[in-house]
Amino acid sequence: GIELAPGDYQLTVTERDLPGNVIFASDTFTADASRTLLFSILDDAGTGTGEVFIRVLGSNDFGVLLDLNSPPELRAVHAAFGTDPVDIAVAGDFDPPLFEDLAFPELQGYEPTLSGENDLTVTDAGNPGAPLVEGTLNLLNGDRSIALVVGPPEDLELVSFFESNRRFARYARLRFLQMAANEATDALDIYLVDQGEDYTEFVPLVRNLVFRASTGYIDIVEGDYELVVTPAGDPDTVLAGPTNLDLDATGIYGYYIVDSDQVDTVELRPLDDLAL
Image (cartoon, rainbow, N blue to C red; front, side, top):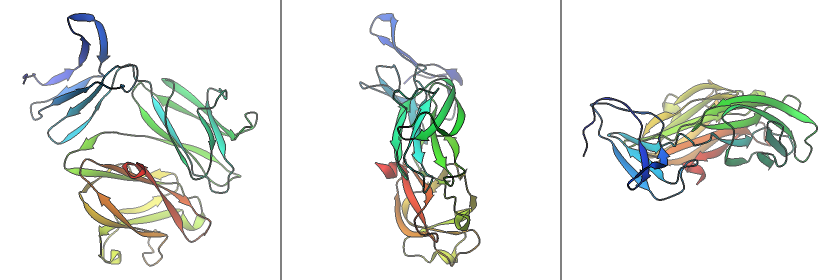
């Protein structure tokens, strides 16, 4: 091993004996005295223009070391119940749009996009001349984000959240995006209990999650759980679940919550490791 003084570093990989031929240059990362770092260099497509893929393993977590040249990546969800399929374009470029023919309640995976301001335009699929909603995202190289089209058809909105691929060796990471616009489901409580337990005997994991909000990532001990969603403050009315949820340490899990064709229910749609 190599001992490093605490501080900020950049990892550069070159061809052997050819320091001018850089095949990977990382963003800045921090090394401190309390951590042991292990870098795993894989001969695989990188996150951007890099020719290698590098994982970094710490004492309690691990993730991907990003190439400085990695473009931002964006994925998209159609979460607007009752709205026809849509196209989503960046900077007015519909030839082709970044996301094409995206139907409710689908998720389309990551696509590389622009560093800096990304002006997004949402239209009915195949009709670029009639914007339904517009928005702007400011993204940096290496960023990952999710954009969601939400709301009733007559009042659509575009919301977005930054995302993380950092994994923890001792915990699972779990999050919820509340995109159900129905007034009856505007604010939600979410229960996570051991399988077989009566959720009404416990406090919610998440309280009063309102429309267009995200919980962020919640660290959860590995285990087998049941998930139940209710209106905020009304544990006796079940909107979704119970749903079995098996969480592994190092996993990243998520749901986006959307309206269903029954006004007294919501639908849990999987994200991240749940969508594999």
